[in-house]
Every structure is written in C-alpha cells, then in structure tokens.
Image (cartoon, rainbow, N blue to C red; front, top):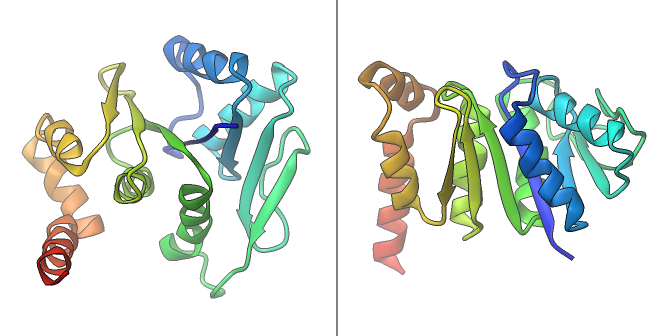
Amino acid sequence: MNKVFIGGSISLSRLSDEVRQRIDNIVQKGYSVLVGDANGVDKAVQQYLFNKNYRNVFVYCVGEKCRNNVGQWKTKCVKELGKAKDFHYYTIKDLEMVKDTDYGFMIWDTKSKGTLNNIINLLRENKTVIVYLSKDKKFYTLRASNDLEKLLSKFDKNSLESLEKKLQLSQKAKKEQEAFNFA
C-alpha cells in the first residue's frame, strides 16, 4: 500500500480547491496519509480528512503527545532529542515521515524553511514530491534535485537569499557533492 507524506507551511491554514482535489485522489486510491501535528497545513489536512471520515491516517509528533490529532488517528511519537522546541526539534518527526513514506505532497508558501527542508530530504531519499506553490497556485513534480533547482530559479533574488540564510543550501549542496566525489 502506498504512503503519502502530506505537509506544508504553518502560515497556510486553508486548503485550495486544487489541493483538496489532490487529497481526494489520494483518498480514492486508499493510500495511507502521513501527516504532522502542527498548525497550518498539517491541521488543515487533518480537518479535511476528518470531514471525509478517512481513517487511513497516521499523525506524527515529537514527544508523547500530539499537538493536533483531529481524528484521533493512530500516532507515531518520535522520541525527543532535546528540550528546546526549535527547528531541529520538530524536524526529527519530519525525517521519520520521509523515511516511512513512498511519496511527498508539500503545500508551500515559498517561505517556510521546514517545508523546503522536507522537499530536500524527500528528494535525497529518491522519493517523488508534488509541490503546490500557494503563491502561483500551481503543482510541480520533483523527482531529483535539479527539478528543485529549476523550481527555485523562478523565485526572486530576495526570496532565494532568505531561504539560503535559513537553510544554508549552498553549503549542504557542496557537502553532498564532496561526499559524492569521495564515494
């Protein structure tokens, strides 16, 4: 059975008609949905699936209790590595979802470093990612890092610089290239 990791930006709390249609396709196919417990896209997806009475959902969280589990679905609680509830604290559950899934479906405001980080990690694991950019209301299918580069080339310079500062993308790419050349 296929598993789809659906995630996205905390700033987006409503799902567009196009996104709901894609989720309807996932539901019709009976795929398992892996979703986080954050506000924003996570909670909106949970609410949508709850309203559809869809049961094939797994909520991932850090620690012993999920912040949001609208449908009281099964949970996977990832052991917390530290007490500071920062970016790295919450990314450990995202990494578990990346590991457990077959595909990614990210709903991105083009600003969220967590969503971009999920896209990068899914691609690193050779998993296809459908990215919905809320800004232009379009879907993009990414299968490799060069697909992400093409997508990012559409962004304005200021947006790219901001994402670069947040995730240090060029440093990560350089390290990956060095590791590849070593292998």
